[in-house]
Image (cartoon, rainbow, N blue to C red):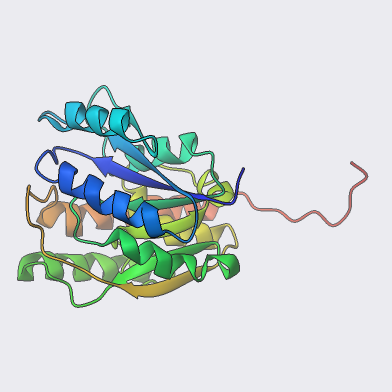
Length: 238
């Protein structure tokens, strides 16, 4: 694999954001610190997202896509991206443009020394309910995982692809990506990034998704953590 980056963009019913997202991503590609490709994962959108994505990819050689037959969820979209990436680094960003792709350069400044670099959303522009439910979910997760991550929900991450492909994914696992990297004896760095209000489309998450759902996922993570297989080889003649 070449030393470059593929940014995975999960998409579910984001037709009103996609053209602006394409422009923002293309602007980043033109000044990125590494050669960068974009991979849209259309998660069974029921609006016009798929034809817009196809048109974008036909017009831009740096953009590719894959489409699900139905809505499988964010964790499935990320797994499909990890499974299909061929670059040495993989990034992740939401399609709502509440984060700025230019901030990937901030994360790339540290990736040589870490397995994952993840953003922390500075001065979040979400409403009170969204911020409080996210804070509650983060507190639950930290209590269970002890991963020390302040903002696991920040949709701006860069991971070494070899480690991303080893993450055992299940529904809800996108909330535990840093914890799973640490479980592999990897290292994680947190970097402050910008955050912006959503200008178009609707959030796909409510109170259940951000609080009660993550609590249930914490128990699934604990089960996996206790049974996760790790080993070190002391000697071999292979």
